[in-house]
Length: 389
Image (cartoon, rainbow, N blue to C red; front, side):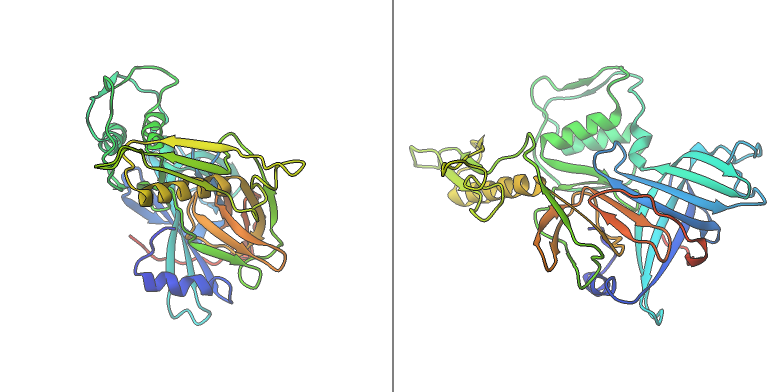
């Protein structure tokens, strides 16, 4: 969940989303170095931001802008200086306020470069990709990451080669082994793929947030938001369970030998009987069906650490096996792979946020767990001319 300031602000924002509130959208025009060029909020007629963890860019945006006088100079019919749209990007800020407009909660939901522009009379349609798209280019000259450097430092170095300067990383001591990593010049190997490969090897999440900051974090293991049918949830949740390649319903941890012990630390954990994919529920003829995951890690030398690791691994597997979809009022501060809960009259459970659409219209609804095209109602969009840094 993206940080919007003091924790008290987030505590106040969450319940407000399920009540009567005001929505405003701020649209900032920027260069690729995050330098503010102009505010274009008054031109915004509609659009949406999509989160999709299955795509190369996990965040994308599409907008319709009113530009009858061609002042934006984004399309091909504007040959003047500045019309080269691929050197520019947009930031979108979703602002929530109570009906009396006494306080404003500004949530940056997208920052990224323009990828496509089309015009239909006075309306300019703009599509944008997340900032990771700036590192999709193939590696031009061979690069080397030496053995022994921290993988977090290696990611900083790789993305620094693309010109990125905005980072927020956790620190982890995992280091590059073997003979190092050589990134040869090839069309199939991009800076982004190399950075993601390093992050995945540490079981960490690498992504660009709504501010356009490159984030490296642990995959969330605690719920950050609960969707309720007496709150923001608008339709009953549709729940599906899938046994994918990473699925397991039992975990065994085999650690190292604690000091003074001749035996390795071992710990086993099995999904509870109540879970739809537990060994008892997917078994047959009274015989439970275990789908185990065995992890050997000599650095684990206590039962407490082994238990925590087993719990985390099993929880992640069971959450990944659940697909939940429904419509809701927008919850703009959620981020890709956030751990969420749903609670309705018919069912309750947990899921990871893998897909979501956020409308840029005051009366639009979000889709959770799937993507839908928002149909803009241009007269209902509220906009503010306000500059947020």
